[in-house]
Length: 171
Image 1 (cartoon, rainbow, N blue to C red):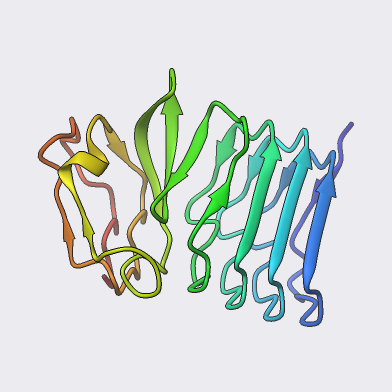
Image 2 (cartoon, rainbow, N blue to C red; image 1 turned 90 degrees about the vertical axis):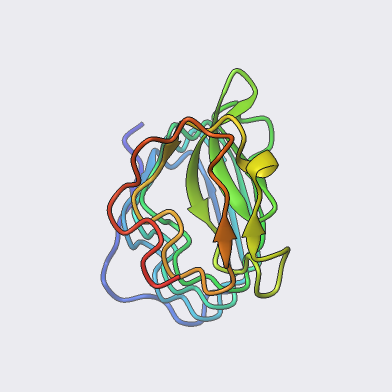
């Protein structure tokens, strides 16, 4: 249907919740800097969540992506320090477990996409264990960037052979 939400460069600082239904894609930085945003509910056929889409939404605590999301950009939730979980509903492509977002294949975690910045600070421990990361074969660029509460990551039970650019920068 060609519906698209794009970044205007001027965040609405007063908006508290966002609900979409039938938006094809959410562009990079679309909701960046929405300081009062506490909830985002993405429904329908949204296929793509752009890079840094919710960047620096400091009060965001509730996110439901109950859509047919296929493409997850670089750190859509960067700077969302209050966010500890993203609900993906029945989407077979993604899951969030202990403040870590993964892509999935055949019901199993396959790649680490983003460590939410609340991990180890306001939610969970500062250690990502071997058991927690078991089976992943890739880590996304910047996946653990600026995660001040993450102190230890054990990749010994993964098949990750290369760490991408800036994966733990600022952590």
